Length: 385
Ligand code: PLP
Image (tube, rainbow, N blue to C red; front, side, top):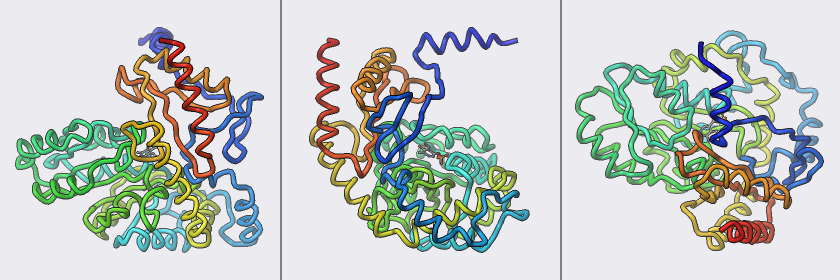
């Protein structure tokens, strides 16, 4: 019998023990924890839409009598959980990403896990960036295919692996995030396209943190670089910038048909409710200009912040690497006392020795607020030296 208490104590000693926070509520860009109101710098609500009550009330007012204003689908999609609205939403995404077909999943986690675990069999091979999200890693573990994890954004290391291993397998795929969730750095999509062509692989890009933040169509980094047609599989989540729920895989008809038949996380799970589909469609179809405006505000904020605090980040996610887990935890607590809701990120979420604060910016946050935060961080860290 494993001793769970000992294992939990071990996590506590390493400052890696997790608890669910006592969050009272979120009001616009603020968060209330206990009775303390703080600037929320730890959310993925990058466009600051999720707490916009005017939008929510407009939506409810307009759609409350709609047949799809229902809070449960009560079934998986392949049973009775489908309706026209789901198909329309998938079609909206196909247009936005210029892709032939798409499939809605309940979460980004289920989407990545389902795609990665089901598409490849034992004669196949997956090359995955070492810092790819846990949902991709879970897919790798469930897949029957062989996999290799290349050093983060290290394309020499990837090419070395491709040279050595690619020919031993039938199908092969390279998988990377575009904006990395814990570092905010961006993969070199052009290089990945070059390598996928050279070594006859498919290319999958997870745009979870880029959708809504990059690209003329808000479709992410591949959209911004005009490379959408070079990417075989794109995954996005709707629970971050789009302030909704669900995720989408975009690809060609054959791959989407295959996933519909083989991805367990799609087949065997009750689909998100119709009201949620309506909400996502409302945002995409009726509020796109508002989203674009928020995206522009966010882009100009993070471009300014990168000058104030140069780091590996090229996006709205700014890591402040402290290295030591306990020091990171203490600094986060200090900043919370000062009114900034910043969370420590410790192993196993990030590699040992790279504990950090993960500051995520939102469109409605002002440059002044971030300037003050960094002054606070600077004072606190120089005091601790
Ligand atoms: N992909 C990446 C890169 C993520 O960071 C996350 C979540 O944080 C996901 C996928 C999972 O998305 P979801 O929260 O919708 O399950």
